Figure 1 (cartoon, rainbow, N blue to C red):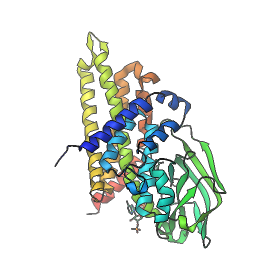
Figure 2: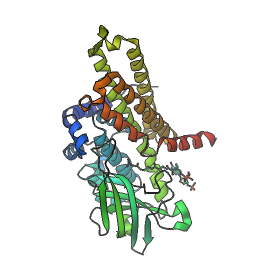
Figure 3: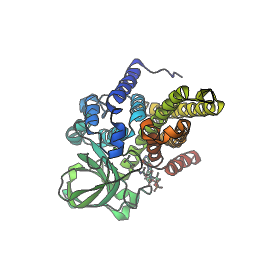
Length: 380
Ligand code: CAA
């Protein structure tokens, strides 16, 4: 077993770290406060190849492995989880789904600009009454011959306003249940496609989360991904990889908070010495470092399995479950180590604590990961 990273992987990690420090750190507090989408920063991330990291260069991507993606996600998330969720959705859900299951024409038309970061995409599964229970889609895509007529509402859509391309999961044939669901490519500006107001969120406040409303939107048949009725499996397979991205985001949020707490604990003095020299703080740091390393190993294992073309449903769900819960614990401890300073915005850890919470909720709550894991371990 070789735990060493390759020269290329180390280079990607360092490039992401530099980018996060120089381009994302300035203004991150203000963007969070004002709920401002990091538009300029995302544009630069696209130019550097961070938005289509795993896509084949023939489709405009960087052609890198999933391990490199995890490394980059961790570094970007240490500083700005609002930027890293854009990166995660574009890479794992939108680009991966199109590259794996899209037609050649769909790849040329949509994947190429998405992988180059010229435009960004959104993945639209959740609905007012179908977040965790994803088979209960109420959005309909009625087959009208050479097009689908789409009606319904999607909720909690990341990149909701800034995306240009939307992968929408909708029910075509209710009788067939999840086998009657399709995944369709919608474009911003299609007649009858409206974007709702932005959600005012606890965390990842720089990312734009919107509801979407569809009223008689005509979507050409050639915009369906895969065979008729493949939509639910498309969503499940895509989310399985997405969970590696969000697990890496949680890992990054936690390691960002830990690094700040470690630094602070070596500077801050109380009772005559640096607080890191008090066992109460040193033990907290020891727990945090151990939990972060365990999450990193789970993320790497899932990424490695994906790169080896093995099944990564279980490892991805385990990575996401553990890393998200770990990020919540570690960020709370980072605030605690900072004391009163941890409670104010200038020290960053309160934002990281708020950002950590979403990793236990999106791309499947922690409870959903337990469903996936328990089904897998009980099926043998
Ligand atoms: N790969 C391939 N097929 C899969 C699969 C996978 N990973 N998981 C399930 N399926 C298939 C099953 O085999 C089954 O097909 P068959 O009937 O042909 O065997 C079909 O899908 C239905 O599966 P289940 O019976 O297991 O479905 P279920 O209703 O019990 O639910 C679930 C399964 C895992 C709970 C699923 O509903 C789920 O993952 N829910 C969470 C959805 C989610 O993550 N939502 C987040 C929204 S996206 C987001 O957050 C993005 C963002 O903005 C950041």
